[in-house]
Amino acid sequence: MDTMTLTTTGTAGSTAPAPSGPADLRPQTHPTPAAVRAGRPNRLKRLWRGPDADPSWARPAVFCLLLATLVLYTWNLTASGYANSFYSAAVQAGADSWKAFFFGSSDAASSITVDKPPASLWVMALSVRLLGLSSFAILLPQALMGVATVGVVYTTVKRQFGAAAGLIGGAVVALTPAAALMFTFNNPDALLTLLMALGAWATVKAIEQASPKWMVIVGVFIGLGFLTKTLQVLLVVPFFGLAYLVAAPTTLRKRIVHSLLAVGAMVLSAGWWVAIVELVPASARPYIGGSQTNSFLELTFGYNGLGRINGDETGSVGGGGGGGNWGATGLFRMFSSSVGDQISWLIPSALVLLAAGLWFRGRRSRTDLRRAAYLVWGGWLVVTMLVFSFMAGIFHEYYTVALAPAIGALVGMGAVEAWQ
Image (cartoon, rainbow, N blue to C red; front, side, top):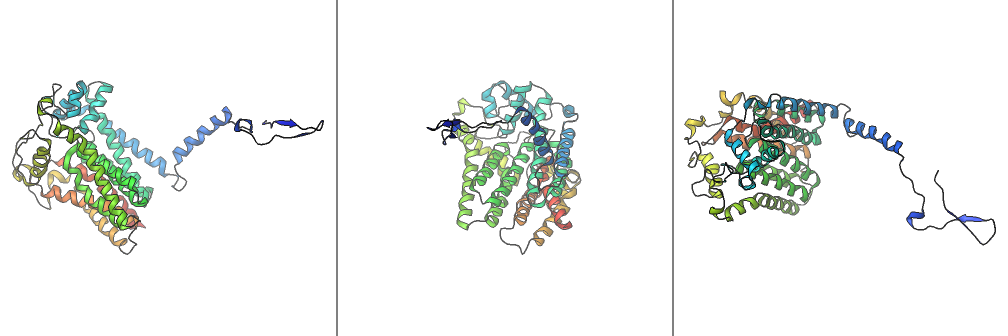
């Protein structure tokens, strides 16, 4: 029982409450061990139940989805051995040498780099340093990136369209063949796809709050995407920016300033590594693999940039020409026999639901958040799909994993909106 200190007055036998004093003289209460133990089940129940505004089935359902995705992506994970040996060798080198780790070298002696920036190699090399060299240690981060991508799509779609839409979107991503392949392989596309999804999530948050902080976070995710697979991440930038400029609930001047902050964050989060590589003397670093002049910038804008668009693949590790080797270009490339069974099975539905969703929201206010979400995900899908369809340079079917989050989100959002 709590007690209060009493003081005596000048009159014998009389007492009076003590005046207010320092905090250590005031009544103090502390939770008992029993109360602490009783609170733990409530926290666990809250974690399982989720926010009060959500349906009671939502949080258990998403936990089941994420667990099922984890099982799907890790089951027999090492069946492909070391997967792409080109990147596995670089991961092993990065686990043996911090210099090779930083530059993304193919060998521990740091004689030549791979033909991509090293961000995805960093993640896998850290896993190997922690778990030891094995196929499992190299591929486990990729599987976890897949689970995270499903979770990000669910969370982002749920914000505006509810848990059912989020679950549909996440399930579509998890079950897309291209995603199931690349989230169990060691190419950089897994990390790139996760970072693009995180960029969409941060963009939606930024639009909701008209927040410069969240626009900076968008820029950071895009910058890290550049350090994963250079220019491909920029395909999502136009409609991320357009959605914010159109829908953020603040003045046009602030929307422009916030967008410029995002660009600055993108340049800084990617440019620090590029600047170091370009400024370090060539004799003190490995040769930039895939380049003709030992320059990362030349690699970025040449072989990994315009070369992918126009088919001039000078510097290619594997060589090859244009459309003759990589399939016919055009609108129907995504529906060819080699690509169609990887991801295209839901592209028509996603496009129809995108058009319907924009029509449903057509007369809403400028700041309508659902329409903004359609711009974010729809712009991602359309721009990326068109570039993949018409690029004359190197094109592999697995590149289409970058479409999976957008397709999943649009199917989930559009299906729920059409039902409503």
